[in-house]
Length: 203
Image (tube, rainbow, N blue to C red; front, top):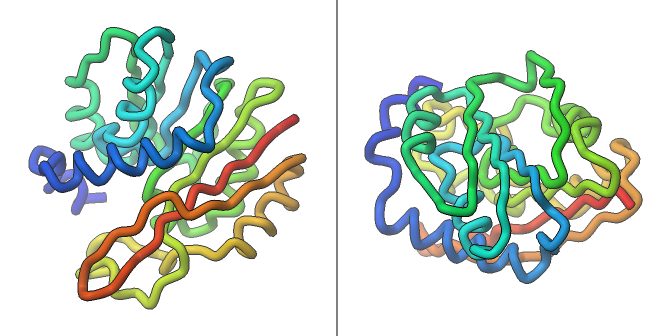
């Protein structure tokens, strides 16, 4: 994760902040946060997605745990303060380690394409939910590998995912319900790159 440590302090550009605010607004149309108190942001980066999500509910109090393998990104996230969010950060690789905590909601944005085995991680995350808990994953719909300027340097392992991919993960993870919806589109390289919300329900 040396790439992300190197760019952490310059990560929160106006363009990225706007993009993740738009992604959060798209996700909020599908997510019900009314009963949510504890949240994990898996692969949180600087917290742009999860903090935008929770900031939109100023009358609710949340406890947010940001998990990432980049200490630099976590340091930036930890310096952000919201009146309605108590933030913790953990430098841990859940592909290699376990975490004995439970959450009402686990979110992840633009992180799953960096995983060696995303289905294995989803199964692990599913065991970290409180009863009735949910997982919301935002990532690229299957693309041709042109989204990132240097896939190898940026640790890209997958060129997005399809509805069929996530549906299979849902079955293997024993979720009762699964939804898939395009919530945002990024235009770059003279192409449109759709972002999906994969919403897994334990009901």
